[in-house]
Amino acid sequence: QVQLAESGGGLVQAGGSLRLSCAASKIDRSVAGIGWFRQTPGKERELVAGLRFGASIEYADFAKGRFTVSRDSADNKVYLDMKNLQSADTAAYFCNAVCWTPAGTKVVCGWGQGTQVTVSS
Image (cartoon, rainbow, N blue to C red; front, side, top):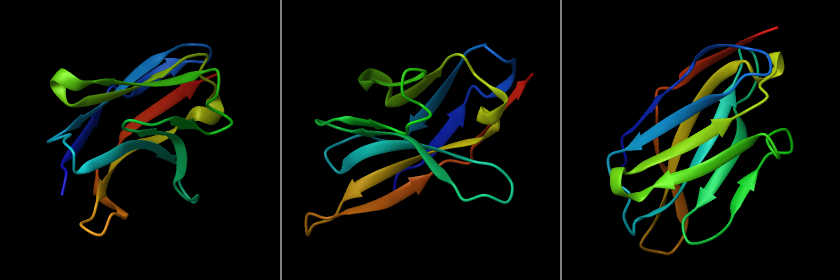
């Protein structure tokens, strides 16, 4: 299991920017990637972006061109930089960790508690 903690959420005006942080208890060879998700009440959690270590970064269509995922290897942190935020981006944002199994498959091995982002119009 990987323990995760998000931070950086808050209230921002439309058009503004925020940086979310996901601090992981470990990022080693057992961790295949870190994903960012968001959820609003009554809706399913949706993928925002997925960082596959040693591979590509996947962005949801709504995130392309506005959101950027990056990693600080020294601090075991993954960031989600969001710009030009709109009211539709209001949600609780979560990060998760995906780990390798001994069989070479991937499983979700941790979720953070989430951080709220509220965009006022």
